[in-house]
Image (cartoon, rainbow, N blue to C red; front, side, top):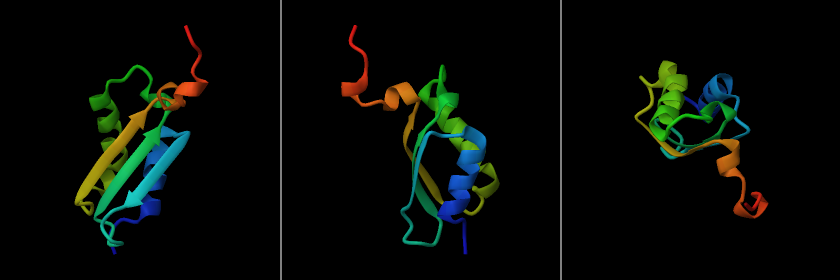
Amino acid sequence: MGVTKEDVEAAITSALSPSHLVVTDTSGGCGASYEIEVVSEKFEGKRLLERHRMVNTALAPHMAEIHAVSIKKALTPAQAQPAADKPQD
């Protein structure tokens, strides 16, 4: 069997210490394709491309077995905060 959802979660958790992480296996269970939503303080001050690179770097040991990774969200905690909770200026 390929890479498991738990493998992906562990790799991202270890590298990015996320406050929110959703990993969805979109391959039908074979572990070849994943969608990822991640919120991490480590993204502060980073552009979107840099954030995606950080996620890909975390998954590097598994990438030989993963066909596709779709990073749906890579946000800072402030960006992930619902609009109603954000302080008004």
